[in-house]
Image (cartoon, rainbow, N blue to C red):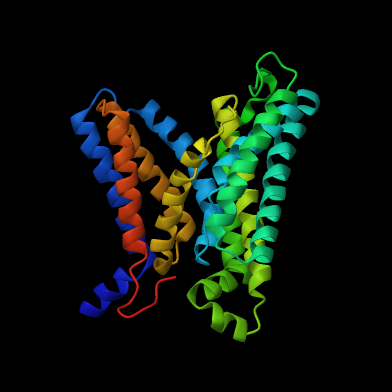
Length: 321
């Protein structure tokens, strides 16, 4: 009996039970406190549409976080890729919007990965500098937009990704792609090996620098997909400067840590998707309760710290990177 329970606690079914239990708990908690402003069928659909955007970014983040790396520039990439997509959509419609977001995001990832592997300084330092550069470039791209409302998707004929079913099709395709990469390619195995022990990974013949570069490329490819969903859902994007894009980093990151925490159950993709939905429930529940923005930001930071603490508890005596 005890062996059966122990086996169940290590299975993916236990992981799913935990996640769905958390989602149900937070939904019930805020529904009781604010029955009319939270948790209706229409609002739940809006929560889901918002959370899948963050989940796509969280899937991309996963590829570098498992290697012990970080990227502060994804928010700036979302802004820049969105604006490039909008600009190209003026001439090329859907093709410009889609390719602008995806290609811009991927090129930025290639540039980030190249600089990180060549400069050999911490990824956070490299990407903070790149964040400032990308914000400046985004401000310049806005000036190139000839439309009366720069950065806005004013053509109603290219808003299919603003709503179901196409936003879900794009998001689910991204989730399936991540699952395929982790399960059926060597990339997932190598990323985990590098994150576990980089020295041992090198001794096994793994080209660590190459796979770190690939990790950044994959991250920003998924960020490009997130940019496509974000700019479509919001029908536009505003350029920001002064590191204001940094706020877009953390919600995808929180989903990523759910994925890292539930990796031991063999369900990182599902954990990211459900985790982002849980986070969205919490944020919208606080809004429904008219909690001030400062308190909402406090809860955001507190939740992030709790998740980081729970997912990065190493064994006693282990060295923290």
